Each structure stands twice: as structure tokens, then as C-alpha cells.
Image (tube, rainbow, N blue to C red; front, top):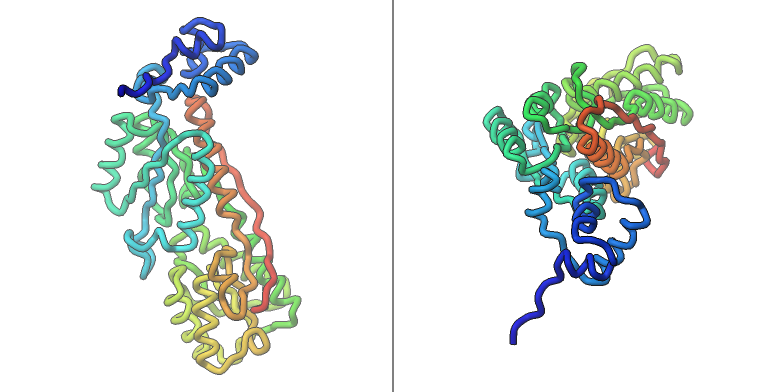
Length: 343
């Protein structure tokens, strides 16, 4: 017994009471069609169960209905390798937000890792061949090359985080400096007067901004100098940095760690040293990721709304794809203090 034939454009046109050409224009979005006609055609598509031929549609629209999600610079962190980044709270939340924003639009993400110039060349060739309409760049690398390479082959890109140097690329970021100031203000409001900091890698602009904001906040509170140790946005680096700071500043009573994973490592080191959190030392993290909620004590942190930021990246990229002549733009989100048990 043969299967029923799949519905065709002619079937949709017959149900909608319009021409085949009109149905094609609505499905391929190639010419203006009155909104009421578009609605009739869409209802007919649902009624017939018609599924557009993606390959044929791409020939008409010259679009792949796919975007590339390019993760670059994963080798910067001391324990975050290409094989581990998917389990990292930061990257995991971003990817969840991107997929959630793309799925309702029927757009497919292609995940790519760029760790060297050879990767950059292969990814650029992938886009040049028309396999994806644009790129969402997630990078911890301060000298990202891909935006310029993609621009040269006519593919728009939106970057997570402001580039280290001015560049004609759209980006979504957080007001990191304000987040550092909020952390300092909160710790100062608790009566703490001997603050220290565990920064992220200082070649990364976001880490620089968080640290600068924290120091500015304490300067306004009358503390002219904040001892700091550099970490790598990881649990292990937070633990090591905290041990170093305890040796250097044994009287410390407040810690700002520039990521929740580092804050979690810092709390472990404090416990090993016999310091109670928050009674002896108050700790504030950054991101509001799962480790902040699951840690004991739960970590007071500066929330970075990564899922919303990822959705905004998708929105900006799709706008650029629809309007290739549009210039680059930026969207900056505000941080939020989330008070829990550690401070």
C-alpha cells in the first residue's frame, strides 16, 4: 500500500483560494502580500500539512535559515578546554538562550569552535559557501579576528561582549563596571572595611571593568586600596587566589570574586582556613549562575541575565540579516544584586 502523497503548493493554493504564485510569495517572503492574504495562506498551510522544501526555498531567498554560533578563545582559561565549555555555567546559559530564541523561528544553529587561525579560516570558508546567514560570536578572546573576516565575505555578526578595541560589529554586553560598584556598595553597607578582590583574567575587558568598578565603589566608601589576585573564572583559580589573599591580607573581611565559580572556590578556601562565611568574611560573586544557588552558603551575587542577552543577540542578528545595509549597534544590560547567604 503506497503512502499518501505529500501536500503541494497547488493543494495550499486550492484551499486558500489564491494562485500558486501567491502561495510561493508568502512562503518565501520574496514580495509584499496583503496581510489578510498572508493569513489565509498560513491557515491553508496548517490545514493541508504542507511543509516547505527548505532547499528550494533557499534557492529563491538565497538564505540558509541557519546561523553559526561561534565560540572562540576557550583556551584562555586555565581549566576550560574546548571539550569542557558546554558544561561551564556561563557558556551553557548563553547557548540555552540562543537555542531558545532561534527555535520558534525555525532557524538552526551550527556550533563551531575557533581556537586558532586555521579554525578562523575554515569557519570563514563555511560562511562564504552560504551555509549560514550570519554569526553569533561568543568569545573570551580580547583580539577577536572573526568579525572582520565575516564582514569581508558579506555575513553579519553579533558579538557577546564589547570588543577590546573599537570595531564595526554589533554587540550585547553588561554594565560590568556598575556591577563591581554594586558589589562594593553592598559589602560596605554590611560594615566590612578590609576588602579584597579576585578578578577575572585582566586581558578581558569585562574583568577589567568589574575590577575597576569594585575599586571605585570602595574608594567612595573611604577605602583607597583594594588588594587583588587574578583568577581565571574557574573554581580552582578562585580557590588558589583566595589562599594567596589570605596569606597577604590575613585580616580581610570582604571578598568580591568576579564569577560565581571563583566565589565558590574562595568559600572553600575560607572554610579550610577556619573562616566562617559570612560571619567572618562576606563573599559576593558575579553572574547568578547555578553554582551561586547550589553553594553552601548560597552566594550573594551580581546577576548577569545571560539568557535575555543571548535572545537579544539573536534579535540583532536577524535584523542585520533582513537589512544588510544597517549599521552596527549595541545593547547594554544592567546588573542586579541578588542577596543570598554569603553576604
